[in-house]
Length: 154
Image 1 (cartoon, one colour):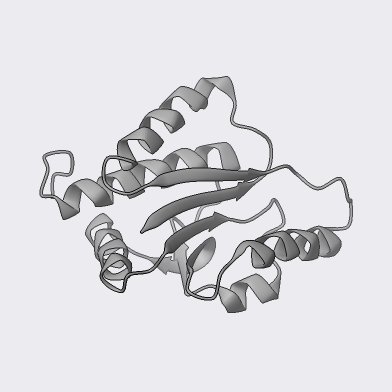
Image 2 (image 1 turned 120 degrees about the vertical axis):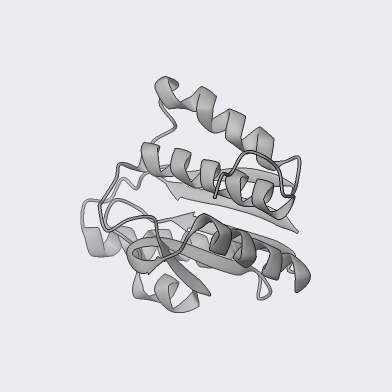
């Protein structure tokens, strides 16, 4: 199973890029993993931006892909529960597990409907640069939990 970390917005800033790259490399010890960064839209209307971003995402998805949407209105889960989610998808022989960080205005309802799971990192809203780093770290943590490695202390 391949893990895709997907996000809309600016390229990662130098201050966090090294850490993001490090956690992404760490995940690849367990699963093939890559980032798909989509540039911000040049449109100005939030509704049109969400529709444009939805079109990009939905065109890239295959029917068997498992989509996890990150959204502050989603379900809060623990790191061990994230590990179970990842292991469950691997056990189902999913080709791709995709974690999507929506754009600045959220995501279109068509993406919400397509999502297999909606996950909230927090009720707080964070900048995309930080969410990318948190996501990569949590996926890495989940992988170490699955292997009973020392990184996670419960």
